[in-house]
Length: 119
Ligand code: 5GP
Ligand code: ZN
Image: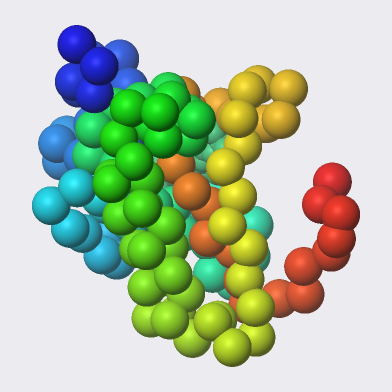
């Protein structure tokens, strides 16, 4: 069923606690944890607890949870004090855009200069 945990999904295993992660925030619907291979001084992933393969499918099925993810991305930025210097929220979608984990996640990146357009 849509949104149900997937046995072969790394981020579902982080939600369940089967795979450890450095969790910085959690709500009823979301978890935020540090990326294992950070690309900036702050690099946190915000995920819905429910399994959807990407941001668009999450938004189509669960608009309120999508809003929770975006609100939590902002809260992470405030916690990390990158909200005033600026930060980026990225949803890589599809392998051609660099998506490697097919459980929707927002990258929250900041703490250094961020070029535009991104590579
Ligand atoms: P994507 O490439 O799909 O947009 O992002 C997946 C992210 O998950 C990558 O930035 C990668 O470093 C991170 N990642 C992969 N495996 C793990 C893990 O086991 N723990 C954590 N905390 N991050 C992971
Ligand atoms: Zn999952």
